[in-house]
Image 1 (cartoon, helix red, strand yellow):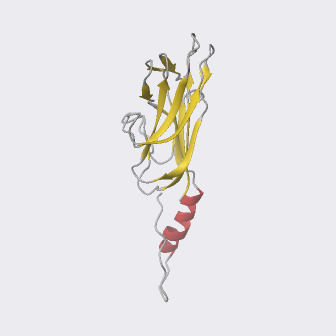
Image 2 (cartoon, rainbow, N blue to C red):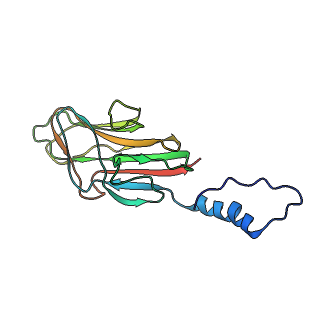
Length: 182
């Protein structure tokens, strides 16, 4: 079901059930529905010392409207046609233990970056410090406008040593987008 631009009614127009269903009922159902996706890593991903690597997500918890493709460009969450609006974008990452207590890592969300950590536009970043236990970076959260074919990607920066971005299930490294409205 897609949003239909509401009709401008004219005087003396004969209104049919099909018109009312298309322009009122279906649009109300579209507005009530949840639109977005939540994706995660099913396996660990190594990020080399000093690298800013795009995180790939090959598993989905849900994807209501084909925002994510787990096989092609699986680092991206892309806005489908007809879904321009304001979005809540959230990312989290859990890393392996930092045995030597180095300076930590960053987690960053970028728009239209094409897999390049310096590409597109940085939307938000979080910084974590290393320690000797498995640790999670502070989540990255951004809210703002996106239009059809815009996409967001999540990058992990290993500041001073190689790290494993932990995969396995959605409780570890995950990326989520929710349409708030337009």
